Image (cartoon, rainbow, N blue to C red; front, side, top):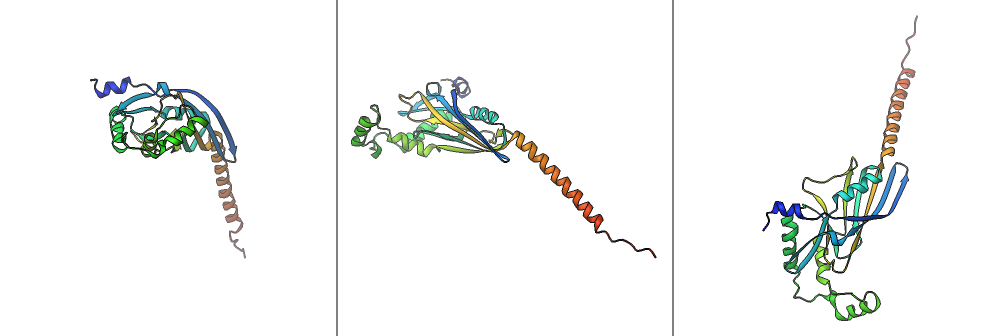
Length: 229
């Protein structure tokens, strides 16, 4: 068995195959920028614990690239997944946690032997006829996604960099990747743009000097004059 430090080095990175549908808008001193990133599921890290197959990847660098493209210095970042059996988690990118602990926890909470109402045979038969011929029962995966993380994660943006703790990373989990090749996540950035921040500070400095000079003039105008005899 490889030691944990070697396992962490052999894991593959989350690969973003392309970025699509970006949108940029400026209003006053605020700017907003949205961009979709498409994730190659086959190149995500994969682990299987007690029958739970999980794929995951670290999206922190991909989010950082979107932020740099947005040219927004400070504000708020929102990352949102488009899928009900995927989830986003703000936690440590550590091999023991991701490859073993999370899978064990999920299987203990959602065993495969119980019946999930989401997997009702009549409902699945209807979906196979009307929506997707390959629709399958995955009620346990929906429950796992609901508990493990959130469909979206907000982050504070300061100095063109997401504010994260020392061990924090934005992790993407796919709990039902069988037969799927791509997943989509939208990154939305909103706040002050680079030029907008510069001109905003310049404007504030100008008005500060103007108010100070106005106050000095007012004091001089209302200064009492001495009457000479």
